[in-house]
Image (cartoon, rainbow, N blue to C red; front, side):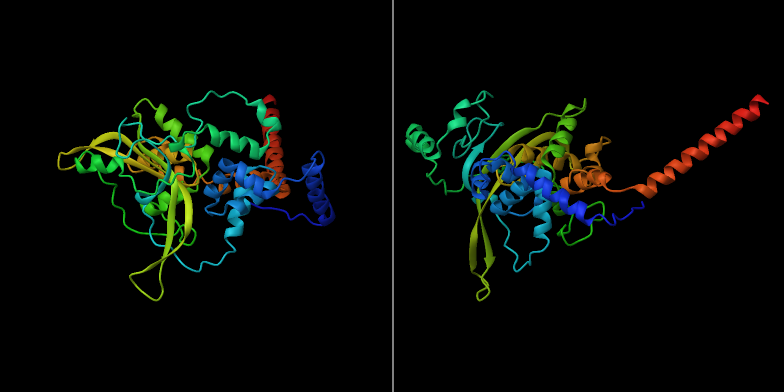
Length: 366
């Protein structure tokens, strides 16, 4: 595809950027504080850090301010920033089973080890506009909430003890099949993709995929006439600790801090193994932040990609190359750039075709 560079328009481009800033601020009483975006728009921030692949909530809030709330543009900005950062060390493998849980539910079983913890969610409330938020005063509202909370549900309560996973119980009973073994640990930010991809690459691509695209694909797979309805074995939201190997002692580690993640394991239709065993299939999803719908969609798509089928959601290339928000938005948005040469060639072809069609018509009339 040919492109024409925009020449002689530097002043126009600079003016367009200045106008963009003017439209951002023209009706504002005050500029948004980055910290306020980070702390009060947490789901939006979590979406951006998830789709950018960089756990940096404050930088994600800054990107959202710069992008005027456009999550795709903010993810683009943050991923571009991430590409400039030096990688100094690699953390050790994180065990989500040791998560400091703030929310944990199961749709498969009512009673699970450690009990269900509803945590922060609006899943069980009516979708009604709360007009009192128009004149909300932060500290007074926070004090009122804390006074109404039961003592055992105080958010300062630390559920630091690990909870046993529901999937482990099914696995011990021989009811759950292990994931397909596809060897190879790759880093999708450094290694070129070659299909079929290792499971590690598949999980990385899905983990930073676009929330809307993944939800739509997962929804389409559930609506197929042959599809089975997945069940959430367990959904947990909480903090996991990042550690690195201590450079002076091979058997010691150094903690770097915590990151919030959402982990989902779904139980899908059972399959028959070569040895005759019939077992459930497990779908797995894990994302940065509290991104529950995306994590569920990821678990559904991960399981679909691990099984054979003819629908689009069984096609690795179709799914993995189309869920990336940066790739998708970039390619669609690039249509706004000059395509003068390519369009002129289309005009030439069309005019030539019209000329040939007219000559053919004249010849037939004669």
